[in-house]
Image 1 (cartoon, one colour):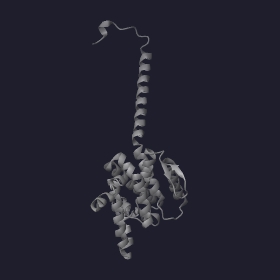
Image 2 (cartoon, rainbow, N blue to C red):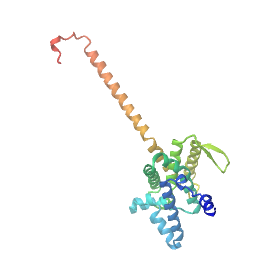
Image 3 (cartoon, one colour):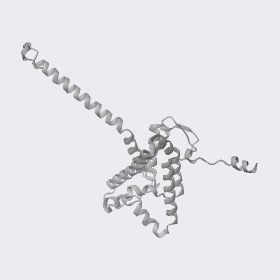
Image 4 (cartoon, one colour):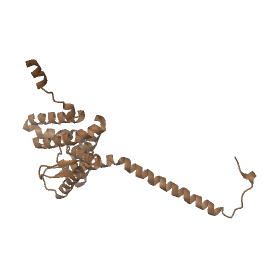
Length: 256
């Protein structure tokens, strides 16, 4: 009886239903890097951030080409990591179930690295001499997370999102629109809140362009086909106009 109670009284948690493989791997990797960050001595912390974080001037002039990738795994504090990983779990798992592990990881790093490249471009234009914003490191997976948000809005636009503050229920597309608006006005306000709104917008932009690339090229192909049909029609009309007074040809002039 005792053995039966232990056997059936304990239920093992099926993590496969809670976490998908790619999301699980990203959660572990980000958390592990954050733990290492927390253990680094104070005198080495900033040198590591400047070496592995995203410093636009360091990429454009120091050729630190790894930074648009490595900055995704660094975070500025526990809550920075927590909210990014919470969003990754909440919205990333469903995307991975739809796309599969490989496509999801490709999309995650495409939007994250793409957001980093946009950050470099914007800050280099704003500070080409490297005396202000081009020297400020950017860290965090937020660019990729905002890419995931825009993908969730495209794939699941009517899914209901329950917000805590304020306590309201919104469709996914409305929630993502609000997040995008906050990021947009954050870039214009220059509020000094130490949040890289440029990376947030960059992740959303790269994600949207990637997701809509098929419809864009389809539209281009349609326009090209329409233009070819109009051109052929015009040529035919010109030919008919030039030959409208010509008598019918003799049968022996036809070639089979």
